[in-house]
Length: 268
Image (cartoon, rainbow, N blue to C red; front, side):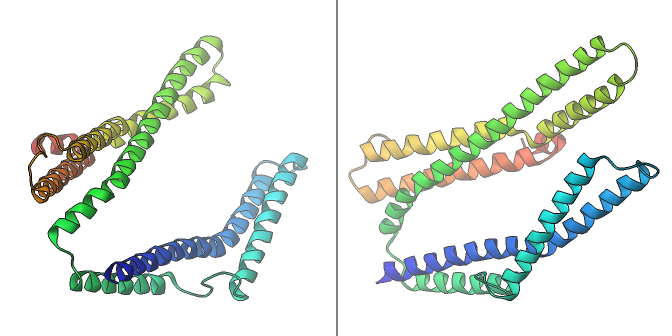
């Protein structure tokens, strides 16, 4: 019964988190789409006044802006109808109200979990069963940062090569000047972003932590050192302590990457 109660709480929490996410997207679309319509019309009018004031606007420009404005207008009307006719799941419900409901459900979950706390060995065993999801998360984030690093590197390669190629190809200042300015700006931004976010280091740290956790999980599963004690409770306790130490080290490395270079040297 305790397990069923806790599972029901987790189901309610997941349901409320999904509802909050959907409601936030609904509110963004409900108020953002009319703003996008007005912005599109203003840009269209500004182009007409500044570029084609004394001539006809090209049909391609008119068709593009007209289609975008029409599509956004239809989307705005459809979202307004869905909001006021209660076609959505949580119409006319503020996001803060859903967040309050979520906090109350989480509080009830904590109270029930505290009231029916299982013994330490059961908690350690369940902790071991949750680790595959944690390792999958670490590897997923590691792949994300690795792909980000590779994309930045390829953009740097292409941008740097394009600057040299355009410089060698064009002798007159125009139109090469604008292209070179754009490519130089792109290379500068990517270099600064790569140095600030450090996706390569983040990918390496996440992958290293996932591999270390997997190594300890395999050692515990096979009953080899350091988890070869005759009492399983001691092995589980040592395993939980070791894994939490690895996760703490991972969080510390992330904090070091978020600090400036001078702050990193002081921490190290």
